[in-house]
Structures are given as C-alpha cells and as structure tokens.
Length: 452
Image 1: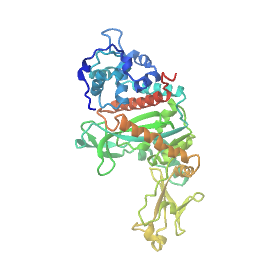
Image 2: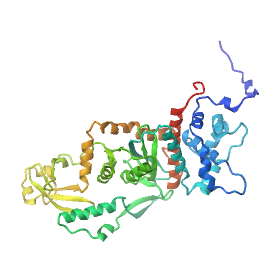
Image 3: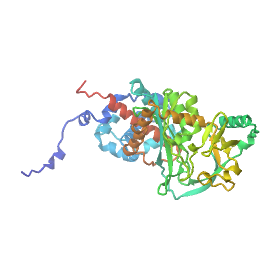
Image 4: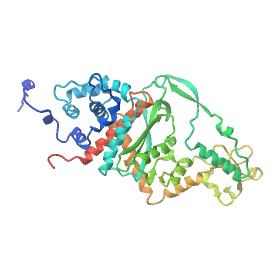
C-alpha cells in the first residue's frame, strides 16, 4: 500500500532537551567522559589579561579544534557551519539551541594573538597522552617510528631555485672525532678542522607561496611541495610523539630527536621498529649505545645486475681487509671525511682476473669496497632481525604506525593542509594526533549508561 509522509510535522512544536537529541553512544559523549577539559584553563591562564571585554571561553576554542580534527572537517569555517546545525557538536561545546556560535575567524585570531609562539598544543597533546597512561592504555616498551608526507598549500610550479647549506646532522661532531681516530689508528694524518667545517652547498626549489615547505619527489608522477609528519606510536596505536619538517628532510635525520622526545615525555623503550629508510650506521649505533633493540627490515643489495654483490666480498675483522670471490685481498687505503673506509684491490692482479667483468668497470681494473666506521652496528641489527623476539616487533608496524597514518589521512583530514608555515603545521600535527589519541581512549574506556 502506497503511503505518503505528512510534511506538516516540520512545524511541530515540542518541548525537548538538547541532551535527548544526542545518541547515548555518540563519540562526543565518549570524549567528554574520557577527559576533563578544564585543564586547559591552567595552560592559558597567563595568556589572558585581567582587564577588557570577556573573551571566548578557551575551552570552547580548543573543543572547536577537536571537533575539526576528530571528524576530519576541512576548515574552521566549515566546522562552524557544522556546529550551527549539529546538535551533538553543540552538546559537546556546552551550547544550547539558541546560543550564538563564534565566528570562524575567532580561532585564527586567538592563535595569532595568544597561542602562536607557545607550546600550548604540545601541552594539550601530552596531557591527553598522560591521561591515557594513567588509565593503563599506553604500552611503550616497543616504539614504532615512521613519517608521512602532507601536501602543502602551495603551487608546485611557483618556486625559485636557491643555493643553501646542507643540514648539519646531530651526530656530526661524534663522527668527526671517530673518523680522525680511525685515520690515526691506520697511520694516516687526521683531517684538519677546516676539512669538516667547509660548507657543503646544495640547490633546492623553494616555494614562493610557502617557503617553509620542501620540494618532495617520490616518482615521476609525484612531485610537490610538502611537509613531513614524523611520529612514534606504541603497540596499541597511541601516538607518543610527533615532529614536523619540510618534505625534503630525510626520515633518518629525525629518528634520534623523536625517540629522545619519547624518552623524555613517556619513558625509554626497549625496542624501536622502523622501515628501511632508518637503517643507517648512525641510527643503529644510537639505538645500541642507548640499550634499545633496533627492529629493522632486510634491505636488498643495490648492485648492478650481473655484478658481484657487496656480500660476496668477505670482511676479515682481524686483518682489517676484504677478500674477493677470487681470493685476493683488498687492503685498507684510507678513511673519507664521510666516515667510510676504502679497501682497494691490486690493479695488476685484477687486470688478468677471470671475474673482472663481474667485479668492476673501472678503467684501471681496481675494485674499491667501502665500509662505514660504524658498520658493525648495522650488521648486528641485521643479525637481530632473525631473532624470534625481534621478528614480531617489526611485523607489528603495519598495525601500529602505518595504521595511524592511514587513519589520519582517511578520517582526520591529514592528506593535505590549508595551513602554511612550520609552526601552524606543528599545531595541525599535535591537534590531529591528540584527537586520535583522545578518540581511541574514549572508545576504549566508554561505559554506556545502560551498562553502568
């Protein structure tokens, strides 16, 4: 039987409380029950004056940002539009049916005037993380590190070429000392300080729209200005720390400062899992020397097809030399200022070697094999990769940090940004990951009123 709905009910007047319109298991109810947002007053107390007009409640401002990043709304303007009509959002903010919602520019103005050069969003992130820790939800003995690129709000065709100095790495001073010690141990003169201090320059593309972003090239189709969001998570998927850099900064430069942040704020992990980009001599050395187990993957040899691989040349630690597949000795020659020892084969013998075509294309028939002065740490990490205790740690990456980034991009609007500048992108990272941690904590600790 065909029936028609009576649209006159649009004008029906009822007496109803806002609380009745919000489902009992709605996410905003879970978030409100998971944490007391009044802690924000303590964090912003010194940023407000005692005179003048009353301000917008700072808890309302921060809750607006949480609505935006929790529900993946693309901008604050759109968030305000949603709040005007969404009863659940109004309930979360503590607004009634007729309360006027702040203008969309209010958050931006408060950011510029009060929050811009502060660590407010970092404090909020770590307060939520501490609350999750107090509820025994954090499991930080294994930490998973990775990064993802976030497309910058910049036209990739509008740039200027610029020559800049290469970044100085955190471990550079330690490396220089050990390079000179290694040279002295081999009877070579140490490098003078100016050899290391000589500026190394590189040419980059700098966006004219957002100069703080970095030009990122993944393949022929993916070339854009972007930012890198570096993050560390625990085995339960809670984000323990985050840092933001331009998109052209290599991932390996950020593991040490990120892990140091986790140690300072959460605690020292027993193991750190990361992908192949982090499998470097400096990172493995840092982890071993700080009593943390590296859980790193197998990396394929990058040798030309048809040629001997580096693993075909056997290193003799006692005599400090390499043996080639033909049994000849490659003796130590020198240590470069990058920290690589060079081992060279005898030219005259190699010229008549039957394996020459598989060994080298060098015009003087000399094979050179390099070995970093910290290579033993990489080899030990490779050895640990086969241990039954380490295998499941690395396998857990796909369920932890990779899942974090997938959810952040698909559900929380982190695939691209409308903001510009490192400070604002750091705010976005902190708020996005804080919202994700709060959402996870809220879902895990929620007790429906019907079950209480």
